Amino acid sequence: MADSVPAPTVPTAPGSLPLLGHSLKLLLDPLDFMASLNELGPLVRMRGPAFTPDVYLVNSPELLHQLLVTDARDYGQARITAGIGSQFGVSLVMDMDFDGLTLFGSHRRHRRAVQPAFHPHRITAGTPALRRAVQEAAAQWCPGRTIRVDREMASLAYRVNARAVCGDTPALDRVTAALAAMSSQTTRGLYWRLAVPQLAHLKHVPGTGSFRRALSDLRTGILAALTHQRGQGAADGSVLSELLRARYAAPDEPLGDQQITADTLFLIWASTHGLKEVLPHLFYELARHPDIEQRVHQEVDSVLDGRPVQAQDLTSLEYTRRVVKETLRLHPAPWMLGRRTLVPVRLGTAELPAGTELAYCTYALHRNPAVHPDPLRFDPDRWLPGPAKTLARCADVPFGAGVRKCIGDALTMNQLLTAVATIAAHWQLRTTPGHRYRPHGRIVISPGPMPMTCHLRRGRASASPVAAPEHGAAPADVQGWRRHAN
Image (cartoon, rainbow, N blue to C red; front, side, top):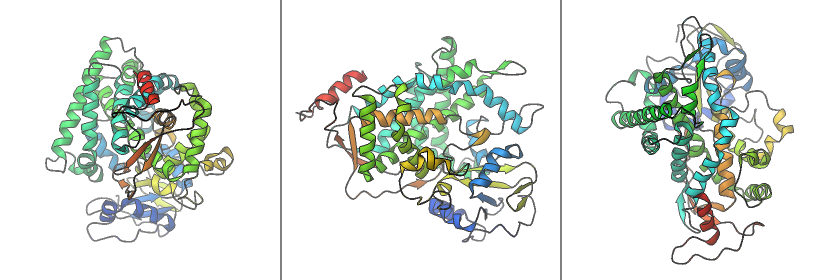
């Protein structure tokens, strides 16, 4: 960071070590460490390891709103984001750079070109295919069987997002497999590149070989899908097909293949985390709160009346949507993001020079008792219109805020709601006895191993009696569900 004496009103986090700063705490226990800094104030300084800048942690929603919304032009992406860009290529998540435009203007130009790919009509059009994928996955479950929900949802996330992003192309299976392989190497292959971008292109960083091979395979699959989409006239409504049709304004020009590939690589990787990380947490919370689960079941039964969920049903699933929002509050997937000052700024009482690194921890902010009363209680009704209106702006940022808010937020919400409605209409999932919940914070918050036992729901008004399976066969209504899924 640029030489400067930090403002005396900004406290420094305890536990800094010589040469290491706070990096050991962030490595060993990042979530609890970040949450513990809430009590130190709205802005807290964390020491970086030797030869890296200190980072200022933004703890208050008021300062975060200034950072992400009102003064967004004064900030660029942080140092940690450079680790992503150096692997995927410069895309929407990075600082774009167009001749004659500022970083803010460049980002806005590129986002406006990409935004039509995430139009609500295109997202809802993908709901039937998404629902069928969930049905096909859950149709393999059997009553009384214990499954690894974290693995099941990961596999579902890869298939669903490979199709949503790349479309129905001959390369779809290849893209899905490569996405799964790369995701399994994300922590080892990408985490160090985020923490220390200088290591990004060294050969012996942990996970380098397997991560780069998986990334190369995914890039090759995307290029094959791009070629197919172009040959078919890019008309299937997938994200990739829309990027092929995207145009920059003033002057009117298309995105180049290199830019499309970079954007697609990042989007397909990032879009998996809703189903992969958030959905296991949601079913974990439902298992812990049977009263909330019952309300979800009642709403799903009332709205769907025994038929498969449709896109138009999602707006009627009001309580289920609140359950999703509460899960995103307590268990956000990306848990820390950052910004860098482009000019000298005043943030709260602190005067910060250009080049200052800042971060905000979604996990800690969402668990701050000064922001969310009784923050550890899982309470979907805190998102009723009345209580929600009392929250400060940027008190709830699972997808970020402002001009750099996640472009796929509506896609993720559509996927989560469709998956929950489809599964909850037929199944209850229960944590196995003795299971120890161990969330793990690296690039995203992983639920860790999540073994749960499947129980077919009974007593629904729309459900026919279910006979006990014989010789390993699925119950009657599950067999019917499988026929519908096919």
